Image (cartoon, rainbow, N blue to C red; front, side, top):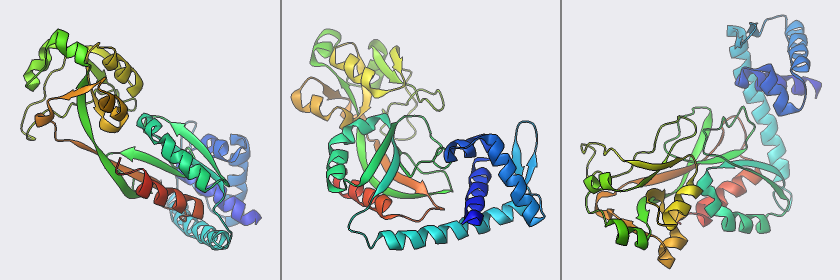
Length: 295
């Protein structure tokens, strides 16, 4: 078991490329991690990492050993999972990350918790691009195409982005009928936390239509201020439909420019490929695919 612990620590360091990050995941100091790696290298008689004052990098031998260790730990997790599957229900901590739009999923996650009371949910809300492996998440829900080859992905649904404003705003400022009309309107824009770039509104009938320069009345990196300002009649926002479904049903917000808006957001659930799909992760993935979408 001590050997397995050393292999697990090595894998954490190899994936994070950081003694500090690996130590944070395991609840030990960076110094303790460094000493444990040194003992492993001494026992194996080979250097696994090139170290500098700022970074560490796997040696060719370390890269080869990392892939083998991942397979070994995956087999151990698989054996544990087989035993867990003999139990009455999935259990244990499930650490998940959701985008800010994920607040709309709360009724569904409450139902999940009622179905699986032995699963302890640890939920992080963030629109930044979290590092699933380095930050120790079991699963994350994100929009867009998956790009990390270290992760497994399952598509769970989609929703449309809509351009909305309050009826009182449109009575005062007029209703835009073409994208060019937005130049005369107060636009409530979204900035991606991970890149600092502004979200592009889906205003083209085709991909060849040039982007429209939008006058910014307010810029934010989360959805709630956009929804609030739009409801208060302070401008127009482009928001995922599920984030304003209640407002649209109640009439406090209405959509415009629907003929120009053809974009859908695709959502996936992602989890580390080096981990066996444990009963609690499988229960989570299956539940959200069946219950949360279509929304």
